[in-house]
Length: 148
Picture (cartoon, one colour):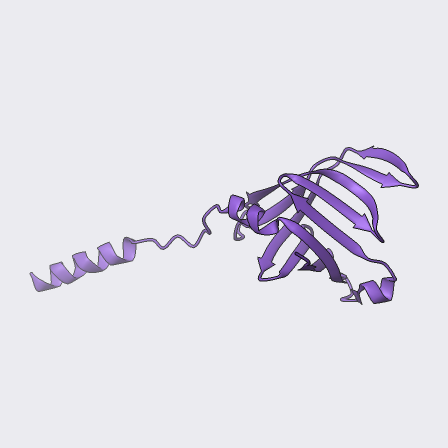
C-alpha cells in the first residue's frame, strides 16, 4: 500500500506545471516608459560595431507621453505618432514585450510625409536604461538613458 501511495504522490507532483510565461504587464511597461530618453549607443547585429552620439555626431531623443511618441534628431522633431506595448509570442521562444510604433509622420527638411509601416522593437526597461532591439535576425540593438 505504501508503494501505491508514493507512486500516486509522485504522479500528482510531476503533473504540476510551473508556468514560466511572464504575466501580461504591458500597461506597467508603458507606464515605466513615460518620459524622455536619450540615445547612448547602438550595437550592429551583424558585425558588433558600436555607434554612439560621439561617433555619429548626433543626438537622438525619444519622448513618450500617454500614447504619443516623438523622436528628435539633433533637436529636430522627426517622428510624431502613437505607440503601444504588446506581448508577442514567437513559436518556441519566450513571449517578448514589444514597442509598436504606429504608421507615422516622418518630418524631414520641414516636409511631413506619412510612412505607412509599423516598427516593432523588443523592449526592456531596467532602472534608468531602455533597450530597444529590432525584431529580426542580427538586427541592431539600441540603448537609451532616462532624462526625467
